[in-house]
Image 1 (spheres, rainbow, N blue to C red):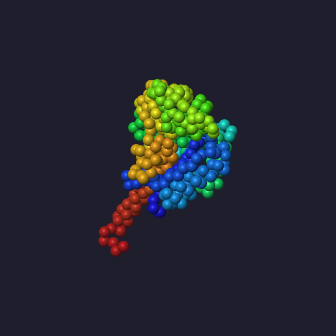
Image 2 (cartoon, one colour):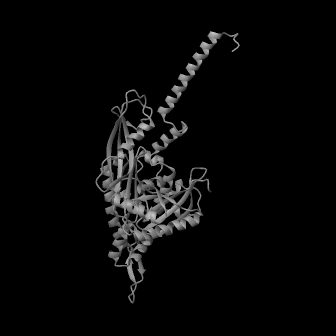
Image 3 (cartoon, rainbow, N blue to C red):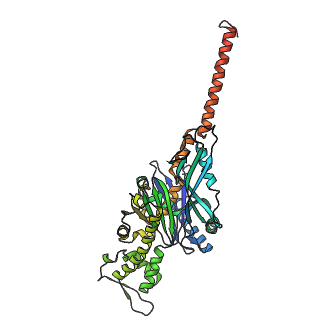
Length: 437
């Protein structure tokens, strides 16, 4: 195992902190070697609010994963979410010399690098710069400009920013747990790697990751990320509604939601009653399953309305042939997919990370609850932008040189070859075939 590449994903969520150790098998599938989790008491809506509690939970989760996989963990890929996440579309351009023949991978990366230095609101930091469509000499709609001729290269970029304090607090927790953060990735982008197929991304699809503290949205079209959003509502707010509406304890409300909860009240039997233990010296409390479902449906409808608004604002509502894919712990509510279909008019399915997983003895990891954790590991093996992988492959095939450098190398070889041939010809003509030289 020493020579194999292992990746560790660390999902710092509102309800749980999960660490997963994985490797790629010979078929390109992800094999989960170890998994650890801990209750997350120091995170609210994706933001660290208590350093010590978060560090303790990280240490517990990583230790479990490390013991199960029988490896030492020192480096992790971390997910980030929260209401502070913002995204926008920003245009950028570079000018090339007229003497340069074709656009190279270096040109594309130079343009992306310049976008990483644009001004953002104070207290924010860019975490992702993802190109949309390119324009070469005012000819738009180009996905891959490498190899084309042109002097002006432009592109629209999907810029994602996060609060600097939130990033620093996450990094501080990771460091205090004696780990180093290899990469920081927006959680819905990680989840998309785990549950979406390439066909869905090409056709147009909206990923909705319903976590404990937030609901993350990511829209893909033509295999490119087009829109992202983080909604500050999730499964915990539903639990809170049940707690207040049914007048029960927090842990009882969570059990009611997970065991008996339904997202559509009409699907609940009006005569079905569940009895839960009362407080000290008080009789048991009876809860109507229909009333429980009504409380859940009201909050789910609010979340779906906000998701629908994000889809409409993105401008891709009529282009989502792949519909909606729901994942995360909240996707396990009964009839939640049907409620999404009814309210949005889009085909909806539940997203499991099964497609990208190989054989594993940890069956629990196939649950939508761990889509983000699995996606973080996959992100370590795969770029968020497929074009980046293509560019790296081109450079690798060329022996680590760029297209421009390759051309120069070939031109230089041709020149020296021609000079050598001319010298041979001159020497041959001067000394003749009978020479003793």
